[in-house]
Length: 518
Image (cartoon, rainbow, N blue to C red; front, side, top):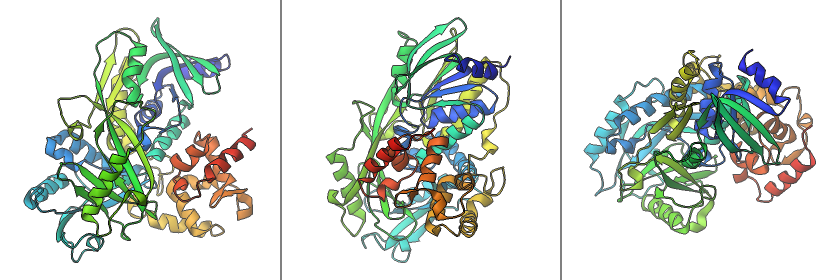
């Protein structure tokens, strides 16, 4: 009898059986669950909070090679990330898209020839089919020069990509679930021990309900909690150390009208981005600080806000002050400890630790959003043979849910012609406001048809709980995307929290309580 069949039968008695138990519902855990399920392994994933509740929703929202990592000779990491940019863009053109970045040249910092050489290397390290090459620009004539101080005469422009990081996690979890994985959010792994040739785990939901999981292997993808979880699973052994780096961001009202982003160099060597965000805003970040506090309670401090405002004000004509900040977020990146003295220099590459002394335990250390798919592929490449699974890697040529815009396989056309896809949807659903259809297209891609299935008018959308947020979407998010709270819906499944009044969260939580799912 197949493990998946036994797992289904065992679920009725409160016990699940699986090939792989994944602990952690961030991008690494969700990516590994997806890859493993797609190779025919039975998977259970547990996350103590919401999907992407911590580090994976606190990024700078970039799919990028990491231009500044060239300074630290991380050529392998940069090349890997540069290759992944276009793989990811093709797989999910609804939640990712190309973006041009402008780097104003500041006197007294890196010389122009060195920047140009670095950008040339950045262009050449990996083949590009979608993203244009870098070039020098005259800021007096280029649109990106308009919001900058007139002292900045010269600059450079290059390509990378933007991503809705939290939705990326959710889409991986959806794909994993559709391939048979069991996804349990709000569920903590409270006990784990080797038993015979496998693992015996106790999972406890926030409601207090418990279930037992018998797993042939465990993947520790707990992010900032990786080392703690490893100590729980196999106490006493010598472990790889994590270095927790805090990254904080601020959001202000829109500072410029064009669609380019900026990359600013600070005299201390740090890099800060200013990125068009949610149409009406500009996202500025990030900081790089060692962090020693509670990983579940990470917040920006006043000094970081001032730092980001001051650096931005050095470049923009209009000064930015803390009073301009409309929202902030911060997260802790669990990076592999190395010899770097400065937080900004710590490697963003990842490492694995596979224990085969008894039932296998694979721990994931480090990583970045851009390389998550490759990380997941390499993780399953390590683990699958130990479990007797020899199916090949598959995610490089697969769309994420909703990304099959012009067919079931990833295409450059899906990236280049996404605007035409949106226009087609606006014609098809002409009874909805065009702006709302565009938001649905960006959030759900082709899954918009599942969201609006059976609807033929605004009246069929259900109650408008808040401006532009209808009951049909809230129910879809609860039924298909594991959303349970206003924070899940307003800040991770969407960024509607930026656009709606503050009291919306309380109103939505009350609505969710009143309208429980059957």
